[in-house]
Length: 112
Length: 114
Image (cartoon, rainbow over all chains, first blue to last red):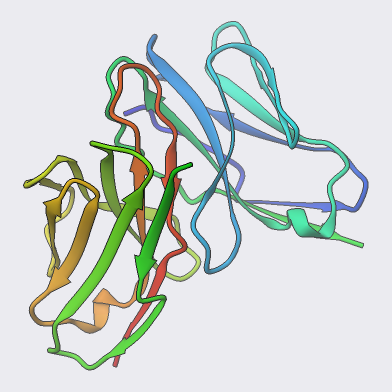
């Protein structure tokens, strides 16, 4: 499994754009990049997933450069409710089974 | 739509007592099932995963065991709990088809061993 590296924590203010970058230097050809959000005492919630270039949904964007050795989760105009831990994961996508191993994630604190 | 249910939500058990956490998935068939544990302020540790009935793989040696008696039922057990078993336990599922499959998590169970 590819190892991921993320900043331990980040601080922001309401209304700002937050970008969390994840490094995955040994990502394999068939690996996808997935981001999860976790609030205290809750299960992680799927945010976004991508393979290359840019993916956007209603809550976030995911930017993946051509070499795919890193990825950036972009949260536009964060609010207090975006305070959470964000996990970057690399999942093997060639078969139907994925054994996701979570790192310690990035703790995002949004202040007024 | 698919849903995942996990219970109990909170549990306080004495050292040496047994444990049973249950998880069921609805709205899908032949899912891959997972048990994770999260210590306070830490990341999630994969404990067990299952690709089918009766097929259990363990990731770390420990005081726990898992079983899958039915296609969409996953049970985490212990015969004698240790203090170190305290933590937040999460059940999860993913599809079993070819290609990428997102993993979805239950709401979790807080276990405190006293």
